Image (tube, rainbow, N blue to C red):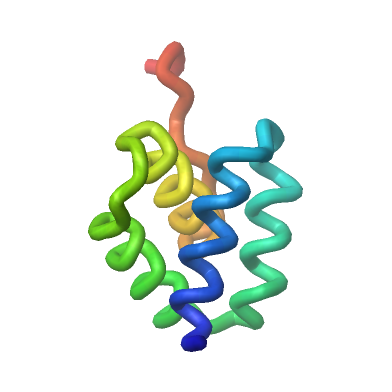
Length: 78
């Protein structure tokens, strides 16, 4: 299984089962071992997965946070 596939599966699981972003992002960073291309590809792969939109969005946010090193703004942030 390619690294991007591993990252995608783990991000989807974390999106569903984890409520705290920091440990989830840290885990994804550890799995990626600095491979930014794999994180980019995992984001693309998430787009095509047949899961709920909410889970897909959260998984992509976690992967993007790992890739770009910043948190997505909260809905209440302006």
